[in-house]
Amino acid sequence: MAFDYEKSIWGHGNANLKLSSPTSFRLRQSLQSLSNLKAGAKVLELGCGAGQFIREIKKIRPELDCYGCDISQHAIAIAKQANDGVTYDLSTENRSAYADNFFDAVIIFDVLEHVENPNLILSEVNRVLKNGGVFYSFVPCEADPLSFWNLLHKLGLKRELTRMYAGHINKFSRKSLINLVQSHNFSVQRIRYSEQVLGQLLGIAAFFSMDRFAKKSNLHQVNNEQYFYDLDQKGGGVLKIIKNIVNSLVAVESIIFSRVPSPNVHLTVVKK
Image (cartoon, one colour):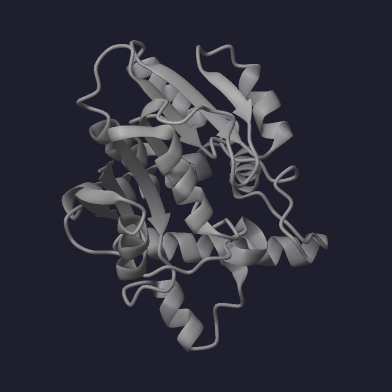
């Protein structure tokens, strides 16, 4: 069954730099990649969902001209309701509405593992990005030797949970990801990593928990953001405190060991 991106929409909330937020490290890395941009520079988040990351980037860097696009009509409709100073547009999986060489920077979070043909996405990024422009991407590489998902796959225990509940159809390794990006006229500027151990264990536990819930509720698709929001509401303050502590530990792990390779790759490259 194909994954329905009108039914599962990410980015409803607001990303922030608090350690207790699961968005913290990714937001820090994307802001680092944009640090040299001057006022008026144009930044696109491709695959923005309901806009949580690009909205916060606009809030932190109001002098930037921020755009977001996504294939989901529902997600873009929600994003536009925020009136956050970001320009949101509908796109297809392989084509956006923007002119060639339009942006100074393009950012993507958790996109390449979702698409049928990542080469087409990277060609589109290259098309809309100016020469010398910055491209930041966060990609979980489930086929990497350091991935716990890869280990579960070899043991026959993975059960394609990330495909069923997150729409992950591409399984990169660190090497295959970097080679793919470099083949599209990009040169590597910076690589950082996150969720070396604790973060991976938390992610795996989350997907097995969602699988149990989906089977119990006879659901074919579960949105992880909504799932954990609902758990917070049911669990009350104690569960929220526990979640904040765990998220903070994962963020600290990522910050301290950001140069230690892991399957969760934060890649900043420049268009040649």
